[in-house]
Image 1 (cartoon, rainbow, N blue to C red):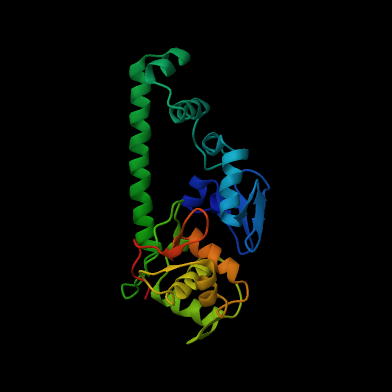
Image 2 (image 1 turned 45 degrees about the horizontal axis):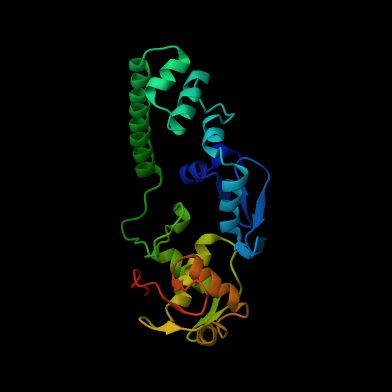
Length: 252
């Protein structure tokens, strides 16, 4: 997949997800969706691992994005240098001194960048309205607030929810998961369905939580971990106490 095929969010965050992998935009690193990865004394799911990879291997990801080798990157070398300097927090006066121009020139260029961003935002809004309109009858299900970047995989319509529930669960009463999905949108639907069986305003130790999760799916530790990672459950640092996210009440 080329960078230009990625969504705006995927371009900004530096990674993208396929059916089987979370992949880096800047190198060949990829992490299988259905695996966990040891990091120091912890184990990271694939999405957390790709974020860790970006932070440790590509701390200069902003620079890499600015200097993307693509025919769609129309920035001149001087503009790229300016944007790198802005991203580093360098003051206008210092940039002007380094480039041998007046500070007013740097301020004008910053203004020009902002104007181009406004133009691009309006164009994207028009494009999305014309080509990516969701039918008026469709509504989106609610999900817990996420700590990382959120893209269109978190935009799940009621129709998506019904179709994916039918695909991955053999039964909803009682709740029985047939297999673990690979795509993030389907994972979120599974987690939302599972969360509906957990009583609100109640705390669980691991044993009690297991009693709820084990009948749903044989790999109940994965269910537990993902419920926490995606904000459906809160957990104390020692892992002894679990409870539903109080800031996320709507699970039906």
